[in-house]
Amino acid sequence: MFNPSPVSWRDTVAEQARRLAPLAVLAAIILAVILLGGFADTVMQRRVTFALVNLSAVVALYVFMGNSGILNFSTAGFMAIGAYTSALLTMLPAMKQTFLPDLPAFLAAAQVSPLTGALAGGALAALVGLLVGWPLMRLSGIAAGIATLSLLIICYIVLGNWTSVTGGQQSLMGLASYVGRWTAGLAAIAVVTVAFLYQETRWAIALRALREDEVAAKASGIHVVRTRLIAFVLSAFLAGIAGALYGHFLGTLRIENFYFDLTFLLISMLVVGGMRSLSGAVFGALLLSLLAEILRLAEIGIPVTGGAKLAAPAGLGDVILAGLMLLIILFRPRGIGGGREIACLPSGKIPSIQDPSIQGKTT
Image: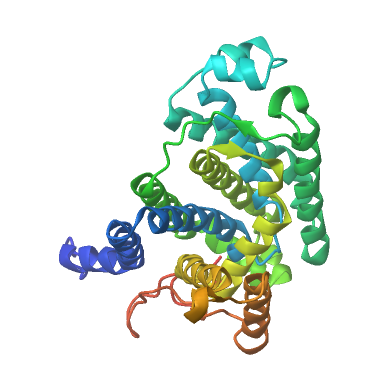
């Protein structure tokens, strides 16, 4: 006789709703930031847009670094690839003739939509990530971190000296400034959604198992290189899209924009928020963006009597960010979020990967 399952469809729907709760809350928070930014002045709206672009980049960094536990310096390099690719494909041919007269003919005549350009930037970054990631993902620990740092330096040198294609060390102007508050916000929601769906997959669970105990994970049959490579390529793809948004937000590209300063900022955001959870990445990006804005205003100064200004010393913001990251590492290694997602299943229910007590233990 057929014995129906004791789990009803209502229980299944409720379970899926609980699993998707973190994504829904994070999307709501980003939407709230977009809407609240609309009440600010023009300068503050640009700062909000910049924060949302950085959020996408931090989430791209989290996809590999957070799930694998391997220090990754290459995200800014992939952002540069995405930014220049999108710029070359979306700029007006007349502008390319002016600023890049030696550009190859097929690039000089190309002009696609902003969405196509951003996706193409992400695709090229992912392709580079695939080619270099296959040998790099065989490394672990400090060796892997140094390898990603080398990749960042290679991207900087190649793009900074490829004068006929990128303009070299000169500014590349003429980009369409289509990235506003809503564009950056909706893109951030899309990037967060992709990262959340990935961390629910068996490849992400296997990657976290490698992070927690590589020897045991290998003994369980997990393929180390393939598992890491999937996350690395996806991270590069999302970073390429974030780079395209970054470039079209600024309207001008300089290779210096995608080097150590940006790398340090992204890693700081991820570490402060909590690199072991998507919620931590989002909160870290938003909180440090807010702190950076407060410090920027402090450096500008507050008018006092007599026409003078009370201003903080130049560079104080970088010192405070570095000190904050040091304090987080010393006293709260898992970051502000503690490695937890914003919503977890109650005890006694079927566990999900949002529960840090089983992260990395499921193969």
